[in-house]
Length: 162
Image (cartoon, rainbow, N blue to C red):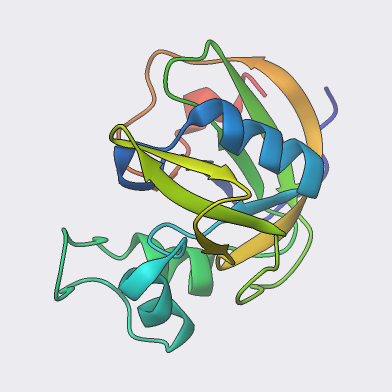
Protein backbone atom coordinates (compact mmCIF):
# COMPACT_ATOMS: atom_id res chain seq x y z
CA UNK A 1 0.00 0.00 0.00
CA UNK A 2 1.26 3.46 -0.81
CA UNK A 3 0.35 6.04 1.81
CA UNK A 4 -0.10 9.56 0.51
CA UNK A 5 1.52 12.46 2.38
CA UNK A 6 -0.55 13.29 5.42
CA UNK A 7 -0.66 15.49 8.45
CA UNK A 8 -1.40 12.97 11.20
CA UNK A 9 -2.21 9.30 11.81
CA UNK A 10 -5.23 8.22 13.87
CA UNK A 11 -6.92 5.11 15.18
CA UNK A 12 -10.68 5.61 14.90
CA UNK A 13 -13.03 2.96 16.22
CA UNK A 14 -16.59 3.05 14.90
CA UNK A 15 -18.36 1.18 17.69
CA UNK A 16 -20.91 3.56 19.23
CA UNK A 17 -21.47 2.72 22.86
CA UNK A 18 -19.53 -0.52 22.30
CA UNK A 19 -22.68 -2.13 20.96
CA UNK A 20 -22.89 -1.29 17.27
CA UNK A 21 -23.14 -4.16 14.81
CA UNK A 22 -19.63 -3.98 13.38
CA UNK A 23 -20.56 -5.67 10.10
CA UNK A 24 -23.19 -2.96 9.49
CA UNK A 25 -20.68 -0.20 10.25
CA UNK A 26 -17.96 -1.69 8.05
CA UNK A 27 -20.42 -1.97 5.14
CA UNK A 28 -21.55 1.62 5.71
CA UNK A 29 -17.98 2.93 5.57
CA UNK A 30 -17.24 0.90 2.44
CA UNK A 31 -20.41 1.98 0.61
CA UNK A 32 -20.74 5.62 1.68
CA UNK A 33 -17.06 6.38 2.32
CA UNK A 34 -17.27 8.35 5.54
CA UNK A 35 -16.27 7.93 9.17
CA UNK A 36 -18.34 9.14 12.11
CA UNK A 37 -17.33 11.41 14.94
CA UNK A 38 -17.06 9.78 18.37
CA UNK A 39 -20.25 10.72 20.21
CA UNK A 40 -21.57 12.21 16.95
CA UNK A 41 -23.82 9.34 15.87
CA UNK A 42 -27.23 10.12 17.34
CA UNK A 43 -29.23 11.50 20.23
CA UNK A 44 -28.17 14.19 22.67
CA UNK A 45 -24.47 13.47 22.15
CA UNK A 46 -24.77 14.12 18.40
CA UNK A 47 -26.77 17.29 19.02
CA UNK A 48 -24.05 18.47 21.43
CA UNK A 49 -21.38 18.02 18.74
CA UNK A 50 -23.53 19.75 16.10
CA UNK A 51 -24.03 22.67 18.52
CA UNK A 52 -20.31 22.88 19.38
CA UNK A 53 -20.94 21.66 22.93
CA UNK A 54 -18.57 18.73 23.30
CA UNK A 55 -19.37 15.75 25.49
CA UNK A 56 -16.70 16.16 28.18
CA UNK A 57 -19.41 16.49 30.84
CA UNK A 58 -22.55 15.05 29.22
CA UNK A 59 -25.90 15.12 30.97
CA UNK A 60 -26.28 11.41 30.18
CA UNK A 61 -23.69 8.71 29.54
CA UNK A 62 -19.95 8.80 29.94
CA UNK A 63 -17.48 11.51 28.96
CA UNK A 64 -16.03 11.70 25.46
CA UNK A 65 -12.67 12.69 26.99
CA UNK A 66 -12.18 15.26 24.19
CA UNK A 67 -12.38 12.62 21.45
CA UNK A 68 -15.27 14.42 19.75
CA UNK A 69 -13.35 17.72 20.01
CA UNK A 70 -10.24 16.12 18.41
CA UNK A 71 -12.33 14.73 15.54
CA UNK A 72 -13.83 18.19 14.87
CA UNK A 73 -10.83 20.44 15.55
CA UNK A 74 -7.63 18.40 15.21
CA UNK A 75 -8.27 15.94 12.41
CA UNK A 76 -7.36 17.38 9.00
CA UNK A 77 -7.87 16.62 5.33
CA UNK A 78 -5.02 14.29 4.35
CA UNK A 79 -4.82 12.53 7.71
CA UNK A 80 -4.69 8.73 7.71
CA UNK A 81 -7.13 6.72 9.85
CA UNK A 82 -6.86 3.09 10.85
CA UNK A 83 -10.38 1.79 11.50
CA UNK A 84 -10.48 -1.39 13.61
CA UNK A 85 -13.69 -3.36 14.18
CA UNK A 86 -14.60 -5.35 17.28
CA UNK A 87 -14.55 -9.08 16.59
CA UNK A 88 -12.86 -8.69 13.20
CA UNK A 89 -9.25 -9.44 12.29
CA UNK A 90 -8.83 -6.75 9.65
CA UNK A 91 -9.06 -2.96 9.62
CA UNK A 92 -9.82 -0.37 7.00
CA UNK A 93 -7.11 2.21 6.27
CA UNK A 94 -8.46 5.46 4.85
CA UNK A 95 -7.45 9.04 4.17
CA UNK A 96 -9.61 11.98 5.28
CA UNK A 97 -10.85 13.89 2.21
CA UNK A 98 -13.30 16.42 3.69
CA UNK A 99 -13.86 18.87 6.46
CA UNK A 100 -16.46 17.98 9.06
CA UNK A 101 -19.94 17.34 7.67
CA UNK A 102 -22.82 17.80 10.11
CA UNK A 103 -25.85 15.52 9.83
CA UNK A 104 -24.73 13.31 6.92
CA UNK A 105 -27.86 11.87 5.30
CA UNK A 106 -27.04 8.15 5.15
CA UNK A 107 -30.53 7.14 4.06
CA UNK A 108 -30.50 4.71 7.00
CA UNK A 109 -32.14 4.51 10.38
CA UNK A 110 -30.80 3.15 13.64
CA UNK A 111 -32.51 1.06 16.28
CA UNK A 112 -31.47 -0.97 19.29
CA UNK A 113 -32.28 -4.68 19.10
CA UNK A 114 -31.21 -7.20 21.75
CA UNK A 115 -28.63 -4.79 23.16
CA UNK A 116 -27.07 -4.09 19.75
CA UNK A 117 -27.41 -1.02 17.56
CA UNK A 118 -28.57 -1.96 14.07
CA UNK A 119 -28.47 0.21 10.98
CA UNK A 120 -31.24 -0.35 8.47
CA UNK A 121 -34.68 0.89 7.46
CA UNK A 122 -36.34 0.89 10.90
CA UNK A 123 -35.95 3.34 13.75
CA UNK A 124 -34.68 6.89 14.01
CA UNK A 125 -32.85 8.57 11.09
CA UNK A 126 -29.09 7.96 11.20
CA UNK A 127 -27.54 11.33 10.31
CA UNK A 128 -24.14 11.41 12.03
CA UNK A 129 -21.41 14.01 12.20
CA UNK A 130 -18.57 12.72 10.05
CA UNK A 131 -15.84 13.19 7.47
CA UNK A 132 -15.59 11.67 4.03
CA UNK A 133 -12.67 9.36 3.27
CA UNK A 134 -10.83 7.63 0.47
CA UNK A 135 -10.44 3.93 1.26
CA UNK A 136 -6.79 2.93 0.87
CA UNK A 137 -6.97 -0.66 2.12
CA UNK A 138 -9.83 -2.87 3.33
CA UNK A 139 -7.94 -5.83 4.75
CA UNK A 140 -5.11 -4.43 6.87
CA UNK A 141 -4.23 -6.94 9.60
CA UNK A 142 -5.56 -5.68 12.94
CA UNK A 143 -2.60 -4.84 15.19
CA UNK A 144 -2.68 -6.31 18.68
CA UNK A 145 -1.19 -3.22 20.35
CA UNK A 146 -3.82 -0.59 19.63
CA UNK A 147 -5.42 1.23 22.55
CA UNK A 148 -9.05 1.14 23.58
CA UNK A 149 -9.94 4.80 22.99
CA UNK A 150 -12.44 5.49 20.23
CA UNK A 151 -10.09 8.11 18.76
CA UNK A 152 -6.37 8.31 19.43
CA UNK A 153 -3.13 9.22 17.70
CA UNK A 154 -1.32 6.28 16.18
CA UNK A 155 2.05 5.26 17.61
CA UNK A 156 5.15 5.73 15.47
CA UNK A 157 5.75 1.97 15.62
CA UNK A 158 2.31 1.26 14.17
CA UNK A 159 2.67 3.96 11.50
CA UNK A 160 5.75 2.20 10.14
CA UNK A 161 3.63 -0.89 9.36
CA UNK A 162 1.30 1.05 7.09
